[in-house]
Amino acid sequence: MRIYVHNVLGKSERDFLCSFCEGDDCWFSGVSGNETERPGALHASEVAFGYCPVDWLRDASGLKWMQVPGVGFDQYLPLAAGGTPPFAITNMRGVFKDCVAETCLGGILALNRGIKKLSERQLAHSWDKDAIRPHLRTLRGARVLVLGTGAIGKQFGALVEGLGAVVKFYGRNCPPADIAGEDSLDSVLPDMDVVAAFLPDTPHTGNLFDEKRIALLGKEALLVNAGRGSLVNEDALLAALDAGRLRGAVLDVTREEPLPTSSALWSNDKVLLTQHTAGGHRDELRIAIACFGDNLERFRNGLALTNSVDWKKGY
Image (cartoon, rainbow, N blue to C red; front, side, top):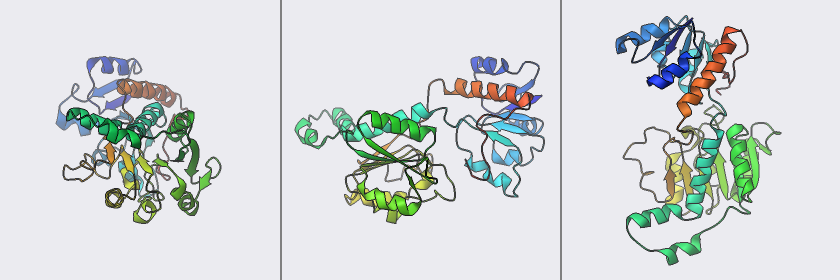
C-alpha cells in the first residue's frame, strides 16, 4: 500500500510511524523527494496522513482515506459539493479534550483571579494589590453554559463543576443537552456568568454570537470560544467589551488566523488570546501518529475507522 505523509517529521516520528507500516511504501515529505514531487506522491497514494492542500486533493482520485492530525476539516467540505465524499477522513476528535478544557479553564481563572492584570503589572514593576484584589472572583456558584456536548464540552463542564460552578449544556438535541434550540439559548444567556463555546463550523453555528446575541449576555459575563472563529462576530464582541456591556473574553480561535497585527483584539485588556494552542500537547504529533497507526490496522482489515467525520454534518 502506498502511504503519503504530508507532515515533515523528525527521524524519531518517522520511525514511529514506520512501526505501523511494515511492508508499505511510505512517501515522507522532506525526505523521500523534493517539494515539486509532493502532489504526485499524494496522487499515487491510497492513504494520506496530514493536512494535505485542498488543491492537491482534487486530483487524488486513488486516495481512499486521509487521517488529519487535528479536529477541523472545514477546508475540505467543498470537495464533496457534488454530494459524494471523494474519500474518507478521520480526525482527532476528543483526543485533546483535556488540553482544550484546561486551557479554557486557565483563561477563565486568569480573568477571574486577576492573573492577566497581575502579569502585566509584574512586567511594569507595578504593585497594584489594593486596586486589583477587590475585583477578584471565584467560580464557586457561577452559572456556566457549555455550548457543545462532545468530549471537550463534557470535560470542560466536569472541570468547572468540580470547582463549584453550576453547569448547563446547550446543543441541537435535548437530551443530551439541557437546552436545545436558539430560542431557548436566548432565554438563558442573560443569566449566565460564563458562556463557553466548543461548537464546530456548520450552517447552524456560523455567526451564532452575532451583535444581537452578544447583547443578551450580562455585563459581568465572560465569553469563551474554543470552537471555531466563525461563531463570533468579533466587531460586536469588541464593541460590547469597550462599552462595558461584557466583562471579558477568552478566545482560542479567531475568524482570521494568524490574527492580523491590526486587529483590536490584541490590545483589548479584557481579551485573553491563546492563539489556537488549546489543543496543544508536547507529544501531540506522536499521539496523532498512534491514532493513525490504529486506524491503519482497521483500514487493512476493512473495519470501521475511528473518528470518521461526517461530510454532510461538517463534523
